[in-house]
Length: 318
Image (tube, rainbow, N blue to C red; front, side):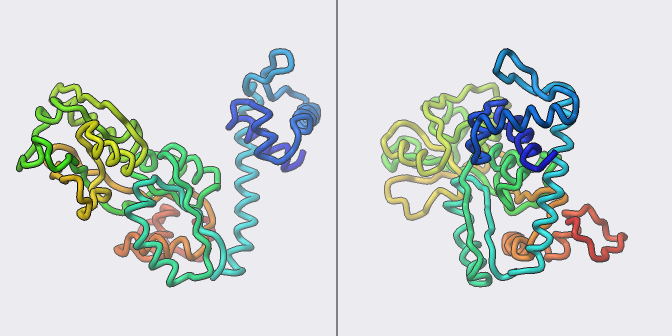
């Protein structure tokens, strides 16, 4: 048994047993993948995959158990590698942030400017993705930290910290009949075509819940992943925009921004890190820039689940 075989089990499960994709991810050949699987099955004396002819359809019962073991071993191996990194080159390295377009475009620039001034030799990588993809990237170790309003707070494999609360705003062209309204109602919005985020993005669930609560069906004519796309189609007159307030630029000369705090509940942006993952000091420093109310030690305590009466000691399991 070797690490390559364990990685194949993990990636095969992620890719729904598409061995072509597994081979691409692991930079090897499909025949090599098949050979490793056969050798592991021969060594264990059980079949790990359900087969139909030459096709693999999924994991068998023993295969599912093996997946859990493989993931655990690979996680521990990654921790061992990170342990060495923690004691070397603390002022250099890579911080990979998985986040949505809205946070990358509007919320993070000021934070990253401060971070770069403190750590000029740290390379920052921004992976823009959906909340579900963000969660998966942090869990798999592809990203060090995830930032999103949805999808992180209730994941059992992440420790999450609140960053800030935000509300939606309404966008209309200056000459729109609603542009001069002081206080819009959901009934008014329901009478117009709407342009907003797609399901699972940037508080879309909060928007849907508000209309459902008053038994109204919004006429969403276009759903998009990011705020800039929403604003583009509002400018074209396709509909009324509902976007995050952070994306409602006051210097946008073509659109009027209207308050929607009375229409939709507030949202929270969450920072998420993998539970039990070793982290470099600069990641905790990044998080203190986002949430100055928490010190680096407090962040580590929360990540470990340590309460005030627990002696901290020196523990890498943070």
